[in-house]
Image (cartoon, rainbow, N blue to C red; front, side):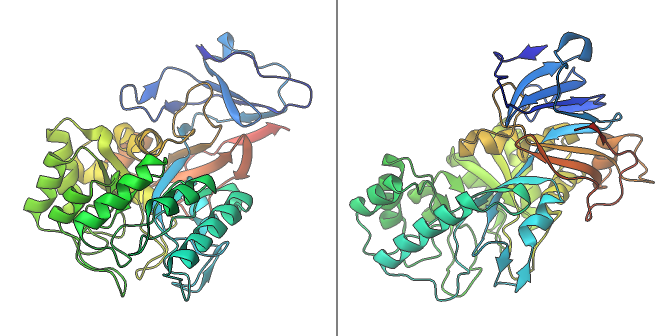
Length: 399
């Protein structure tokens, strides 16, 4: 049993999830936990263990998992939000809520670059970043946490600009290379200023994706030394194999593999990271909305593809979209452990999948069926409207 000090107090909400058939931790060191019950108080996990060993009394909400699998909520490390739950890129409403039905409970902005008339002057880009950070902090479609306000660096920015952004609550940069700064020397200086003030950076990798972007090759990526090598498998166009391999070998930074990229290059990245014994560097994103649209099941599809074709166990592949991303992005979610955010996905193998269980079905390339999504201890959705139907689904037995 793993338990945190009691945080129960008057007016608190206690969630008990029992009869869990398989518990995925999100941690590469121990991806499967020997437990069948998880308890959360308010928005935090407080205990994990066997039902007989944990305190399930006085629960506000009880969920019977009915033998299904519980995983940390999935994290999309690379999205491009704009305004609320609307994307002008595809003129689509409700895309974030739709992704929640694909198990995503947390999103990281790689820049609000699809904003019509996006300002590119220093004052304007700072104002837009602060506005995005504030608005998405207050507005959570479907309950999804969106870490937004990711300014794209432009020529003319100085150290004081990064200090001002950090003081205002901006903690991430948009993709380096989507603005006017495209050379490694200038980018390295600005990334260093950002890092000094606690702002994390991501660099565009590969061929241009939108008007105004350019080829960012391995030399620029290595010289810039951003915290995350964004869509290393291209967004959409990937670098040559030799450059991808060199990035894996010569950089120690995160290797972000995305849905809207080159699948062959994704598998090359995974294989190289595995050979280097550096799977902790692998994180997943969708790079959406994009020209190819919105992918509500994009993270699940990446887990399935990397597991079935990349020859990694399905429980390990789930870590790429949970614990790995949480560690690299300094998030409080992504792991089933006391003190972590109580955000979960409950799922089972899809009906009529050839796999005997959820992990085997994913290893064979099928998507799981989601039966419930919980964010911060609150049920956000029950049976998913987007995944194939799950063989078994959990149920709320008291609330």
